[in-house]
Length: 130
Image (cartoon, rainbow, N blue to C red; front, top):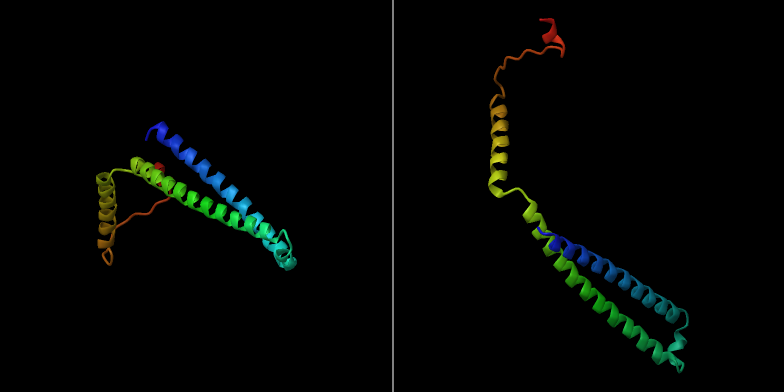
């Protein structure tokens, strides 16, 4: 994978982080407005109440747009990372031969089950003594 593709992945991850932070700020503002409305519900009936509700609606629209942008960047980033993983991974043919070699070793060992096996167990320094 080229350096350009890796830099694109880094840019998308930075954009993803930026969108998450911005979305978190918007959600904090929404929560503040909801607390304000819960503590003083009569604010809505006052002359500035419509403006407050319009601001709340605008924040919800902004949060929705940020979530959609985050989803788009996230999907792009996942596709780029999948491509990177595929380019780095061991080719399928090599992986199959490695697995089949290990499997045959295990099968040979499993085939010795319930058979007598001659083995000589010696201390580590026994070869020096002989």
